[in-house]
Image 1 (cartoon, rainbow, N blue to C red):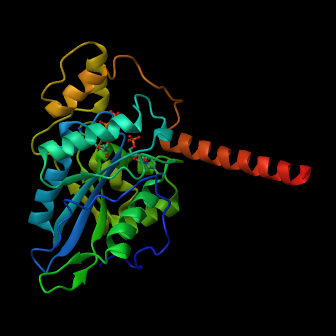
Image 2 (tube, rainbow, N blue to C red; image 1 turned 135 degrees about the vertical axis):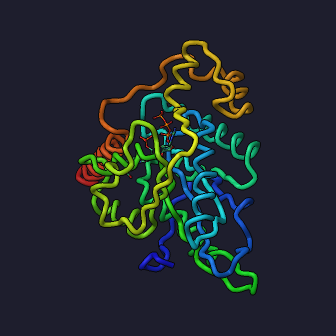
Image 3 (cartoon, protein in one colour; image 1 turned 45 degrees about the horizontal axis):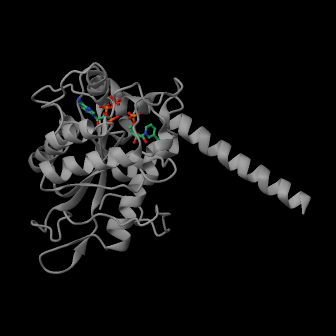
Length: 291
Ligand SMILES: Nc1ncnc2c1ncn2[C@@H]1O[C@H](COP(=O)(O)OP(=O)(O)OP(=O)(O)O)[C@@H](O)[C@H]1O
Ligand SMILES: NC(=O)c1ccc[n+]([C@@H]2O[C@H](COP(=O)(O)O)[C@@H](O)[C@H]2O)c1
């Protein structure tokens, strides 16, 4: 595998009753000459749209035509509520909608609720968690001869997300090196976010960055869907029907929902976590000094 270092050995803290979903992970690699690949899309998914699902299909076609990988699994990983991005509905509803979309429209996509149901986790840590579950715990993917091969974990993202990697303060240099150096990324072109510009400052990791052009331009976004819902407009055929039904049944997105500061969700969530740690340390030291 091209990851230089071995898969993580440290244990990860899981949310209560958590089980890593593997029901659609390929059990055996079809072509033993290929390297197994697991695609992971991190995001808000508030709500999940057809474009989120379509990103996986575009990536799968790209992989088959241009690489020596074989896709063995695809995961949506909804972000924690602590991300506090505007329009972020509760993780409970976001995970339910992603599950409806994956289970009812796809044969291979899964939803991993690991990051959704706990404190905010940086994307580098989320990818480590996948590496741990698939490579450390399961020993990778089985080959037809019964031996096993480690799977490459790779981030799947739109070019707007990758563009934020050049914005100061959003991603740490160490995390960028970990994500792009160890795992790599498949970038789906997104209208309004220039791909070449997005990766300009990431050229050091160019060998691990795959650019995928959208042959049929589709610029649906969760923001537009939320806007339509607030205005009472139809969102049919922008999202899978079971998700539209779920939104109607639960009366979701009728108002503006939670708002956040202008700071990026990741920065805000990391700051919040730092503050909680400081508060906890202060409480601990005051209880020590008072005892
Ligand atoms: N139309 C699109 N084209 C390409 N990538 C997309 C598109 N919509 C979403 N993505 C990608 O999907 C991932 C998850 O994104 P996210 O849940 O933040 O969706 P979003 O539609 O951008 O949300 P919001 O509108 O709430 O900001 C990100 O990597 C994002 O770049
Ligand atoms: N430093 C980081 O790890 C970092 C920074 C910005 C966004 N992200 C992730 O990107 C995903 C999508 O973010 P947005 O919805 O804000 O585009 C989220 O899953 C978020 O956790 C991670």
